[in-house]
Image (cartoon, rainbow, N blue to C red):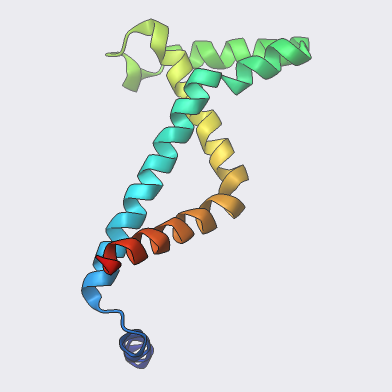
Length: 126
């Protein structure tokens, strides 16, 4: 394991990357990932894709499942301090965000890495 670490350290030194750049890149990537997740959650909250599907498809069991999920979300104990009108939608949009994040993962992760590299290149040129 130590030799693997030493090999990586040597390789990074050869291409001109030091530990400060790695730390900075980690923070940049974490910031991008946080912005990505909150943006997806916000979009799901505003656009409400599940409600759109339920209203478009109009299957009885789908409508009942949606209403049942909204009721369970409103009764969640950890959301009791939040106003009732927001509980169901907030919980449902979080689930939608998780599903969308999984679907977009093959594109999202390479995009976040690419954007991190570009930001690091721009900030290192100054």
